[in-house]
Image (cartoon, rainbow, N blue to C red; front, side, top):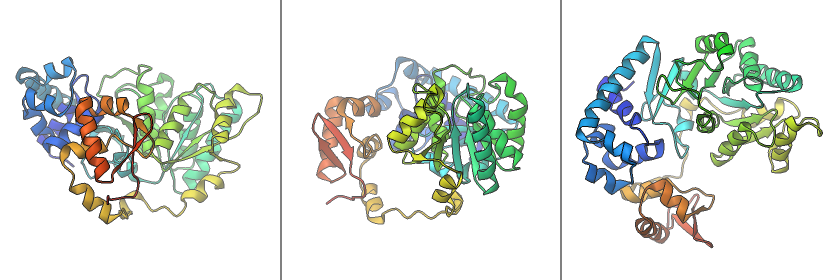
Length: 379
């Protein structure tokens, strides 16, 4: 676990208004530690990336002292509720989640933090699920939990609730990822389920205590569900559904996506059928899921088998090149998207892209798009 002062710096940075995880992590990569970010001048900070006015106000000398006090109070309140706060460089931080492009700066965990590194399968679906959807979700979760998988979902009504209950009925482990602070139980009707999950598994959030479950927070929450999972199963979903957002995050993160077919005349299954048309694996039985991961070792025991040559080459890049490279994927991104996410000016972004292209790390595409070159360490 991180020392109290070190954790306090991470939490203070996390509490900066208007600053998301990509910007936070970029600043820490550049300056080395969160405390050095908090000690940097406004001029030095804005030289790394663009910051909103509210962020700049919070990072001026007066604002920083307030951030430190807020962070200290946040840590104390969490401790009183038996909530553990894990910074993204803590050994307890889940390794799968750390490797997504926008990992949470900190995680609030109520329950067993070691669960976050278990073999996880995400199960998501409609809040207004049919009896068929709830039944299938509960049965699959129960069977997967009996086979040693941790069931990950969002504790919403419908499919999510059924999946958690199925895992608990099997005396297995389950993780609920919330779109609000851990001191707020949402939906309120799942108060008992919340306690049961915290006792045998873990309830997780990236949001500070007191954060309300506003609708706009749930798409961001969904990336954590998929980020913690080896694969995501969509049981029942309409064409416009948060579950499809989770599936989209899973694809972007390189996770397996599974879909359970339903009635062809049911709007509740229209989204899952679309996923199947797009190449998701059809789930005929729970074995279709388990066979993909049955030999996966617990993540804390896995050895990094990445290309050593590529890792060595990546270590030779400067901080700005590394920061820009983290904004790229093997899927094409436009220059506008890269500029917006990286915080670099268009001129600086183009300069860095050219340097990365010359080093064989980036491939330019028509329409001012770029993609990261997978599996190459440069020429």
